[in-house]
Length: 390
Image 1 (cartoon, rainbow, N blue to C red):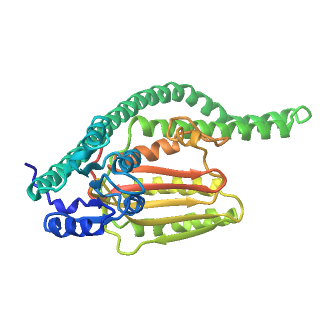
Image 2 (tube, rainbow, N blue to C red; image 1 turned 45 degrees about the vertical axis):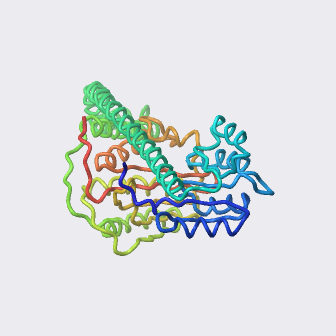
């Protein structure tokens, strides 16, 4: 037998006879938390307010809606709730059909036996608890499989990144050396042949080539970060202080684009163990992305607040903008390597952010609506279980 506090799992009793409701409540409130409703319609309203209800006990003969009809609606809206029908023996055929169709878990005949009802309620709550626990375990297993798949993906990506960086870096050294010599060669050419020297052509294309070279070098740098993620140094950190330390940079970047920058930090946040420099990197990337996505006169806000996931306490940082928003289709791709909506983006910024947060045992969530803005939430556990880079 499970050791449960049965009062933590509310039972809703539905009967159009108010005396019956009161009698049931008085008889069993010692053992269970009892909610009552005089009709199926009112019971459905109660379920909206109390989705934690575990068991519904309903009288079959009610004027507006029979017990079985009510259960059909409950089964559609709240299939996890255990359903028990109270009925006279004369309605046994209805009961059989309801049981066979999966509409009810059990029936109680009138007049009921106290001990039989008490034990039936206990078994029903235990079934509800076991089903919920099984659901939780399945979700955890799916989460574990997803994490393993993600680890494999990152490992493969790291190997690919290392190979690409190596192959690009070698010829890049020669190109970089050549570019470094160009200014002096241009000067010699212009002195010897001033009539054929097109200064605008050489200057413009040299600057363009130099900028593109820097872009390639930045890409290689990000690829190497993926291939060999830096070592993490976890220290006790106050997130609000970390955010405030970077706020001047954010305010300056926002001011340049005529965007309002707002800090909304919740006081008394618990400290967390993290690598402050890496979290700053994540924050910088998300805030600058938000500023770039927000038009003149818009708003970018950074918030902090406590959170919780599967019983684990967390601190959450939200970056919210009033920008153009991200479509559902693009939201599914933004953490994929090399995917970018920016003209000159590498498509690795969010991948690196996601990797850093995962290696802190946390997660990044995104919510967005086209034309209304975007919210990124970084959720970090107080005591991380770091995921080692493959």
